[in-house]
Image 1 (cartoon, rainbow, N blue to C red):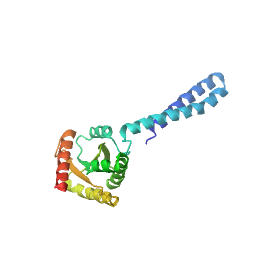
Image 2: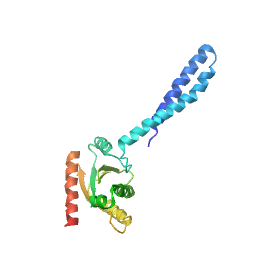
Image 3: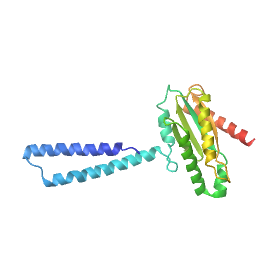
Image 4: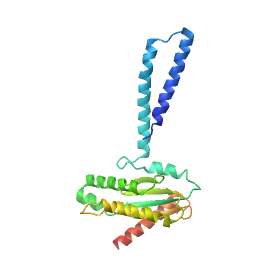
Length: 207
């Protein structure tokens, strides 16, 4: 979580109050004890209000369960990537409904958090990792021009998930990819293609 809101509000209150006190010191030759005591109190309130802003911004961009980015952030990010090459990967958790039905929704939530943690370990720092909704995740890899360049990351994802799988059930995902701009000029086109490729992979797995 960033601290921009706290820093901005703190500095604004500090600067305004400093100018206020300088003015009255220049005019009257002194500063009242009330103004001196009031400054740190006002700065504390400014920091608190700034923190509430930072929290609001954080949760407007993050998925509460997994702490990954959410749809809103992804759509905002995509709007800034026009003309830039990137790959979009859509991931769907295999047999997630079975997990919920057999072990319960609480176990299902833990399952998703485990997957999110392993996905974080599988992508590069510059990549965008988001929970797209339900049991779907989305990865954006800036600068990717060929799908062959995604093979290492995809292998790493499958390996990391397999390594943390409990004995009774293997954690695995189906992944579909699409390239911008060679395979789609709009975000919707990329999503549709990635979704189609993902379900083709899922069909092969269950076929």
